[in-house]
Structure formats: structure tokens, C-alpha cells
Length: 128
Image (cartoon, rainbow, N blue to C red; front, side):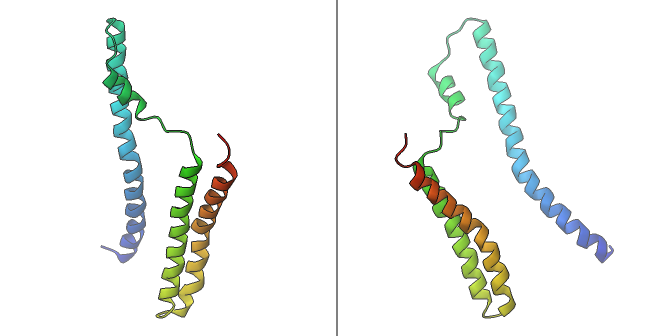
């Protein structure tokens, strides 16, 4: 096989794999919800009462509203990712000095996202 073809197929497979990782679970979750809705519709049409397990299963997919604690947790995680990328750049600088600044630049994105979440924690912690 031609090396040029292989070189173009690798990114296609890589991004296709990422898309599959995101899309496939959502598809199956959608199918599960559709079957649950059909079951509920049939039960309601027959006049049967809804069991509490079914109501709990329906409400389990609903996201809780954002809280300051969730903002703080997300901020710490994003900040940790940024610090980890910066540390990787610093570590790679021992082998290749040109690798430091690009990785530190990339590390700024998650670090600033983390700082924004932490700022949201301080802004919203007194509100309810």
C-alpha cells in the first residue's frame, strides 16, 4: 500500500474512532429511552399505575442543576490537567528544549478553564 494513503488514513481512523466513542453510547441510550417511553405509553393507555422503579429510572437521566461544589470540582480537574501538561512540557525540555513553550501554551487552555470554574465557585457559593 502507498505510504501516502496510509498517512491520510491514520487521521481519518483516529477521528472516526473518537466520533464512534461519542456517538455510539448516545445512540444506544436514545434507543433505551425510546423503548422506555413506548412502555410507559402502553401502561398509561391501559390505565395501569406507574411503579416507583420506573419513575426513578426516568428521572435518573436528568442532570442536576449546577452547584458551586460542582464548579469547584470541575475547576480543580481542569487546572490539574493544565498543570500536568505544563509539567510534561517541562519534563520534555530535558530531551528537547523546543518542546517546552508549545506545551506550556497548550496547557494554558485547560488551566484557564479551570480558573474560570474556580472563579464561578467563588461567585456563586453564596447564592441559592
